[in-house]
Length: 168
Ligand code: ADP
Ligand code: MG
Image (cartoon, rainbow, N blue to C red; front, side, top):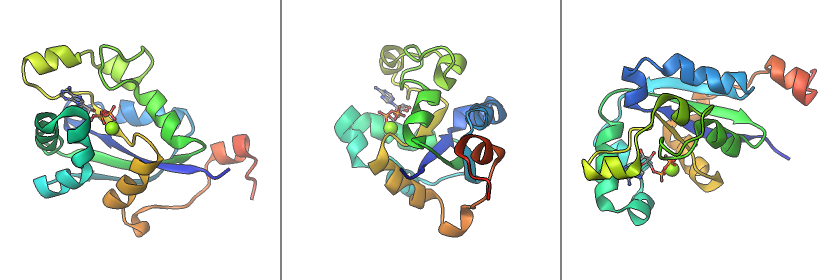
């Protein structure tokens, strides 16, 4: 079984709420390895590559257009996390899409509480602090969209040595 890589973004609301450190800590604490990290302020063209047409199929064209604005409202912190079952484990730590539904202990459950209905009644994006690739297919598109090969690094953590038996 190979380790996986997944893309995580601290969205503009997470950055301006000074939550970058607290959010990153959740992943570090679980032993996920940050193999790439940077702050980026994306333009509309790039945002459209990140939030692709399938978002409009899932949520409608308005939600996609609002998301493209939301992700470009300010800088984001982008990172690639690596670990065993990293895509699912990261989503578990992030919590459900709508913060009012997200479990306590998850990032969205602990740091936000807006609902889909409230956001939609006020024509707002659901500000939920963080993006994480939804599945293997998304991760395969999103990791290379945000990071070149030379922006990702290979190194051993104590977690690798203690938990995964990688002593070399
Ligand atoms: P997730 O981020 O949990 O993978 P999706 O990929 O389905 O969720 O949606 C992408 C983002 O779109 C969500 O994180 C949220 O910010 C926003 N969003 C989802 N549904 C709605 C909605 N009904 N109204 C406004 N914004 C939404
Ligand atoms: Mg998604």
